[in-house]
Image 1 (spheres, rainbow, N blue to C red):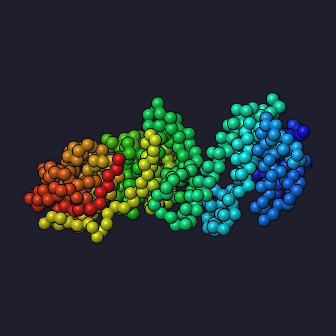
Image 2: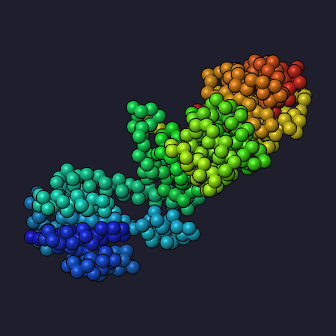
Image 3: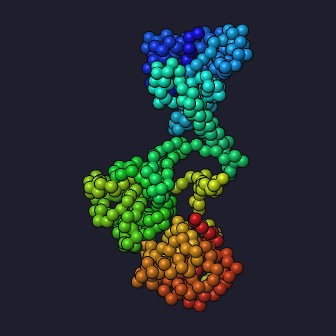
Length: 514
């Protein structure tokens, strides 16, 4: 009995050569539609699937391989005498190789302006059924969904006369990995089309490998970089690397943190980040002044850091940036002069990100995998509710103080908790991140800020449990405070502010970041 192969693919990469090799090895080739045409035009004998089923393709090709003459030939267990007897009685022949990849649903939904009807038509039915059947019967059938595996199958057939069992088992696994991602993509698309919000009862997502990483946060930790299947712009996965060595796990995480803060601003702004915390931030009339002021905010911490800018980096700004060691510069574009200057630094990574200022989508989520589970929450895209923003002290902030207070509030939102930030003239003065108590975070800010602290304003990501932060702020010359409020001891902090003539705003919105 001749061995047979069923080949029907959307991605025709290498399929003609694969069919040619199978034919040379004595396989009969069964095929459909465009795949059959491509094989036949190459002069390779090929049988139309309708000749096997005795039934014509119908419903615009929706029904082709969904037939017992096909599925019985795939699913029959060769070691089961009863299965083989039934095949003989039914006049069905076995199929030994199945090479199928699915309708291009992903490519369809990624097209601009695609209609629902077109997306639905690109949901494959027969393909998943066929490859799942072949994978289930992996002991007897080699199933190929990835053109990269054609050579392996041909090589083993030539060397051994059959595909090794362990290879067929691996190929079966790849089928279910493939169909799982395929179905998840469909479900995600249809969920969005239905306008569903919130979190589903079962949470499934699919990601594609973007890059192998040398290691994770530390050299002894393995890591990988995956990206969503989407057309999103203004996100780190959409950045184009123009220069420098490969991005690392920490590079990607820190750059994303810089982007999240940068998106809070609609004027020329530069954000410097170190270990996922902002270390120097400034806004100005132009990107050069914004960078210089961000650098001057903390010239020590920015060394070896990541810099994000929301305007094109020009030659003048690049000259300043080139004076110190930076890991990454990310911006919407770089001028020719800037590229000439910055590419002289061999390892400096330059990332171009169009739409860098575009806010993240409201449906974005943040996920943290814990052993045995997954924490999922909405991304913190809000900053404050203007109707809830209230001055709770006798003294009100000046117009300039108000600008700086809202600036400090944006900074502290993106600083690890417990977090305190100091700002003056739209420039960070001191940033105290990730402390186990709030007063220590403030003391760090004052230490970093030095002489610049006097006259600055303070932001706190959560309420003051005691009036000690107000007392310390007064001693340092801090002129105004913004915080969420909500402590049972709020009045003590309010009284302290009134005592020292410090205006204090309550946002009634907390921004913990862990």
